[in-house]
Length: 359
Ligand code: NAD
Image (tube, rainbow, N blue to C red; front, side):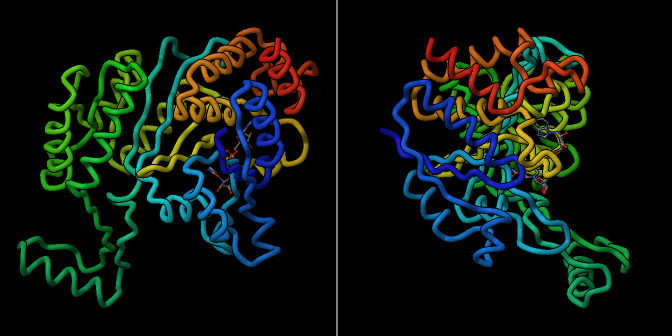
């Protein structure tokens, strides 16, 4: 029996979580759900959107499946997603991007996985505002130490890239490649310009690659990577990127394969793994039994792989791929026209998947 923390989330989260839970139960894998509430509703009731008990539950169970959670813009509680990532040190963000027959896309035969470092780089949050006294001090200090002249009306964001952070993300990418029968890792960087930070990332990636002679390794400069991905995306397999490039390239790859409604993701730390769809809480669809639950179901399949339940995961993915290719028992977003009256609701799609898994 596996005990899994289930965070249904808010917006469309509860309905897709319910659909996903039913489908995962129907695979026959013995799962016990430790349901933990986080997000807008809990914030109203308790004053915090991310109670400590949620974090403790994920730490205890080591595996979590999460629905999307709304982040209020400019007011209200801090992002629960960022809070979870920080509290659990979920350093690797993993997004498989695959073209699936039945999902509208300009491309065919894309099957790549974006592995993004999630804790450092320009996203570390070390920022100096324009006009602040500490910014002036920093500008003066840099002029003195390095001779570089920074305009006095500048704002500054710091980009830390460490050996520790680089090593663990690249190692993660290789381990992922090995355990998922992948053949190549491409480290993405801009070391020709940022010799200190990206240079370090590249050097560490080359060192780590030596430990994995069974997996091909290459390095690609990030701007070239973007062009290559648009022209020949089928050449790539696992991409390992620092935080900022990873953020941009993972959205580019999601766009290449189309379909937010079927795109899964995972956030991985030391000994903990949290699986969730890439899409957000789509508040305007909340409670309408309308949206596609498959992105969360594919995230559930990733979770089954993580638990070593490969047969069940393959079976679930097979059923989902079959439904998408047939195009009959699917939600509106997978129909050729968006207001197609034959589109099924979230729960009815789950019913059909359960039926097929149990057949
Ligand atoms: P969104 O992904 O919630 O929705 C954008 C649009 O994509 C929707 O209006 C809908 O047309 C479509 N869509 C999304 N999921 C779908 C599904 N399962 N089936 C069919 N169509 C789907 O993005 P947003 O509107 O930018 O964000 C809404 C909220 O979600 C924000 O508060 C944001 O911060 C949050 N968010 C949370 C997460 C997370 O919890 N990991 C991720 C992204 C955004």
